[in-house]
Length: 108
Image 1 (cartoon, helix red, strand yellow):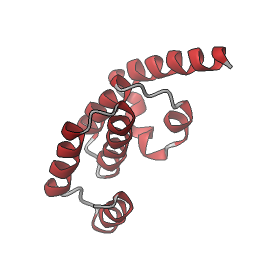
Image 2 (cartoon, rainbow, N blue to C red):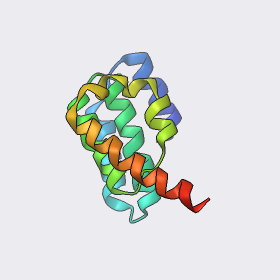
Image 3 (cartoon, rainbow, N blue to C red):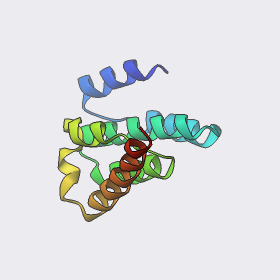
Image 4 (cartoon, rainbow, N blue to C red):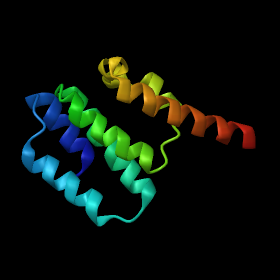
């Protein structure tokens, strides 16, 4: 399924259907690419946030960080992540991403 269609359906229905969750999880298990795993995990984080399933969102945010997330713009700019800011796990993940992004900037 094309992710843009899924995002539209979740937005319209207000539900991240278990069939879609399963499909994403299977995609995460199939791929060996850290970049694709990171992207899929970020998308799942956003979708779970949209439907206010914050603990699950944090699980996938963690997976994205484990796969090399260094995108501070997304952390600061994605309004869906705002409710996660009060979770200690989010703060710890933010620190990891911030350190990784800083290393990238030092190279430039």
